[in-house]
Length: 193
Ligand code: ATP
Image (cartoon, rainbow, N blue to C red):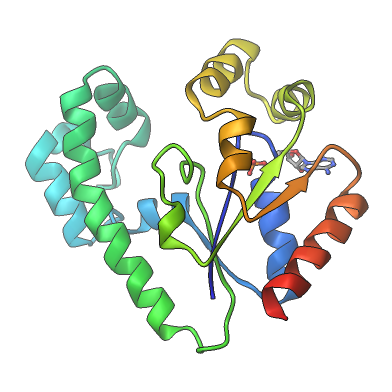
């Protein structure tokens, strides 16, 4: 079973993903995979350097992520180029991980852009984490992000209605961790029954 997990920034995706992992899910984090496929020593890194030049490397020979982010977010063509390099690498890495998982495993792909990129058909089920905007802002401020950045990111993401429409299961993460855990347990038993 292949399950997509998503939610807006600060909704608690990673928190919910670890709850599923504790119950036995194999969780794959999209951001980690995207970093892994262009890590030092990978063909992905070579492709990124071929496209953008060696100035995107830091002193250790890895990608200077801040610099690359500045570059691609200032220029849509560059962003597309980067996505065209990373996307197929991520897809083949995911295929590898999924084929290595036991047939009865519940593999959960935690990806922030599931709804924005309309990835719903890839999955057997989609779990969406929702939390009220004020709460998400509070949680993210506590994590050191600033209010303007948070508002910009929220404005650029899918809305809660769009996410709900894409969901097989919705987890409301506005309460305590225990309350979230109870909902995760219910979804888990539906997924594994
Ligand atoms: P991002 O979009 O930035 O990756 P995320 O959606 O993965 O964020 P988390 O990192 O899981 O969100 O949660 C954001 C913060 O809120 C974390 O510090 C986490 O510990 C806290 N948090 C998540 N859920 C709860 C909860 N139910 N009660 C209290 N704190 C929570």
